[in-house]
Every structure is written in C-alpha cells, then in structure tokens.
Image 1 (cartoon, rainbow, N blue to C red):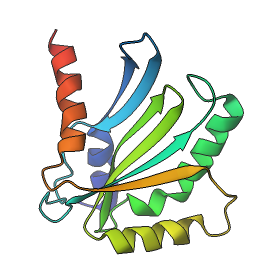
Image 2 (cartoon, rainbow, N blue to C red; image 1 turned 45 degrees about the vertical axis):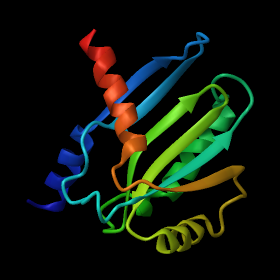
Image 3 (cartoon, rainbow, N blue to C red; image 1 turned 60 degrees about the horizontal axis):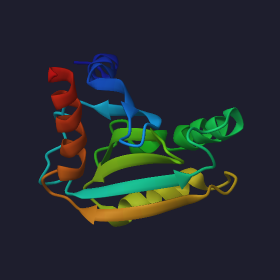
Image 4 (cartoon, rainbow, N blue to C red; image 1 turned 180 degrees about the horizontal axis):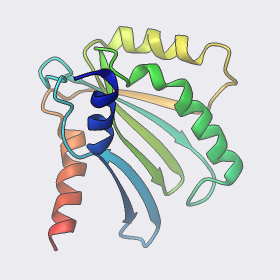
Length: 150
C-alpha cells in the first residue's frame, strides 16, 4: 500500500459529529472511530490534550482561522511520524481540544515546540495523562456509538 492509499484509509476512519451538551450548547467533534492499525496501544500509552479556550459557545471566524493555522502547524505530529497520533478534535462550550496519543512524551513536546517555532503565540494549555488503554478516546467513541444506536 502506498502513502496515498494509507492516507485515504486513515481519513476514512474519521467521523464528524454534532454534539449537544446537557445544558443545550452545541459543539462538534472530529474523531477517529477506530485506532490506527500501526498504533499499538501499549506503545502509544500517553495521551496529550491541547486545550485552547475562547469566548462564546463556538469560536468566532477570526478565532476559527487561528485554530486552523495552529492545527496546520501540528501536521507533522499526526501524519505517519511513528511517535504520535491525533485521534480527536472537539470544539464547543468555549474550548477547542486536540487529543493525541504518543509513544514518547518528551519527543512529542520537542516536536510540538519545533512546529510552533516562529508562529504567533497561542493561548493553549497542555495536559498529559498515562492512558495505556486509550480510555479517554474510547469513552468518546463509545458515547458516539451508543447515541447512533438509539
């Protein structure tokens, strides 16, 4: 399988879902519905969540443009690099969150800093969790599947 076939297969694993929170606020989540075949959960045991808070329920157009520029800078952190995978992006209720799994926390942070070098400052917060079972991601996928079954 060549790189283009791998990319198309990877993109087919993603789903975009509109969410309504218990308080009635709308949001959107882009999520992989299956683990990447090459990402052994035991090796990709560290979850890295990057959060960007913004004003309002959904980002303004200007804020959305900044989110897209930020995410574009992160491309090297999730496209066949062998050490990290982006598995979900959630937007709504005043925050945008990117969830990655990585084999190497220190390398992820080095590569993140390298990717953002020369970029304008971004108001992000980074949280790191040991999650060898991919429980954070799995909870989202299980919730989406249970909603779809109704």
